[in-house]
Image: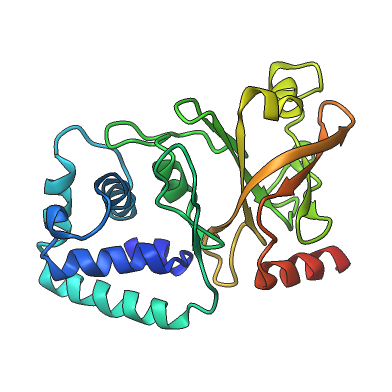
Length: 258
């Protein structure tokens, strides 16, 4: 089950962390790096393996239990080394954030990994909503989970939002149907700069990959409000701080053309 999560994950830093953890027999204190970031990466691994919250273990005990099966650990190592060899893009660390973020720009993650990274899912409590947005009150950051290509099989007519890249830095996004320019949520988008709110875009080409597995999201980074039109839903243009990576841009073009 864990490797199914990793099939749709593409992140050198996350995979390297797990390989480093394997080398020190899953003793988190012996892995080099920032303590807070290591804790978040370890929690991402916990959810990849157990897929649920718990109050019966400590995070370190959870890691030891994952590492207790020598055959599994060897398979993990081989699989992660193989995945790293397949990576063909450069991920970037987001600098200057007021909080620790273990995710890397342009890497691909599962929804659960992303929720853990922002502290929305914790060791004791798992965030259960499957809506296209999630909000971290602690970091005043809203996460937008975006599907470029939608089918009626996966989305109802009321949730077939119109989301696409306008160019390498501008992204057109349609809010949920209940969000209007006079609602609390809508106003928070329009006044984003004034209220210090960060908006992070996580985008995937389709809901399922070619093997019918739930696809991971590419972290496109943070974006600023530019303009909007309409209400309930609102159509908002966001300006990304970093251009969309070439591999994702090509997919976006392909989807828009047909």
